[in-house]
Image (tube, rainbow, N blue to C red; front, side, top):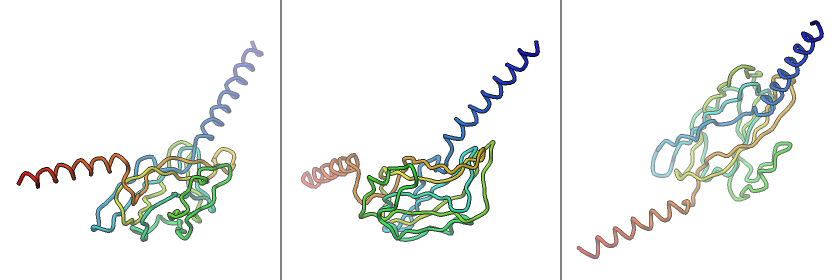
Length: 195
């Protein structure tokens, strides 16, 4: 009977440990939703990214994330959340360890590199809101891009990196947008010739 209890306890412990490891591997800093775009004027649009560090992870001083290829960047759309700084001077930001998405980075478009220097923040049981990061662009057209992040797992303190898809401003209309503009142009042209 005691052997069975020991085996059950050991099995439960191993399963808990495996669950812990698998949950830690999936955690990271990321934006769970696409950015919202707010019209300021014809040449200025605010892009807001609501960022979190997911359950089981924490942001420590030295961690951060990079949004690649943010076209038309002109400045911040408001103060950054406490503890965060922006470097927008590079058009070809380096990858975080174990990430390679920057290999497709457009060297002509600015990358937004955000670094954290505040107190450790995160939660083992729930996502932690890092705040809204707002940037101004000349453009309001959405394009597909990516970002990479670096943070730490709460469970053993190990550094971890990850990458995700996101949306960024683009100065070049997507093919579908070009098609729609072409159809509208043809319709307007047809109306003028009938008049």
